[in-house]
Length: 116
Image 1 (cartoon, rainbow, N blue to C red):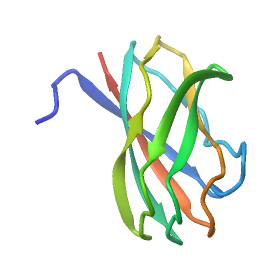
Image 2: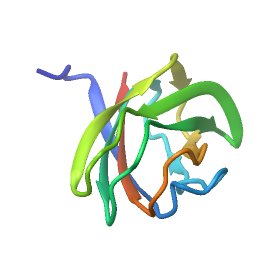
Image 3: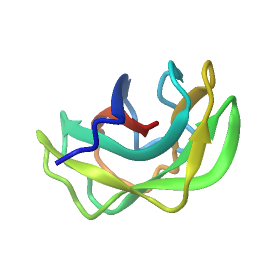
Image 4: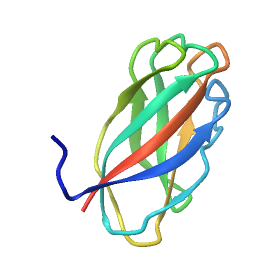
């Protein structure tokens, strides 16, 4: 069961996660907290390997990665693993930047999970 202090931000998609440095749209934070997860869904094509993404806050790499573990089939999802903690304040902008490890041409749809 998820904490009542968690909220979710629908964060659009990354259409070309196989391309290095391709970024998701920026999502604006409505309430301060910390990122506790990124829920995602792979569509159009499967990923071929574990794929990492830089967590970007206000245009700067936080040093934390979000990892899509293993090959993920098209139309399947998972909760991405985070390598550290990112705190956010009201009006911060967050996004993901692909490190481009996967083959194929999957689209990644994502939702941020923030804990107050």
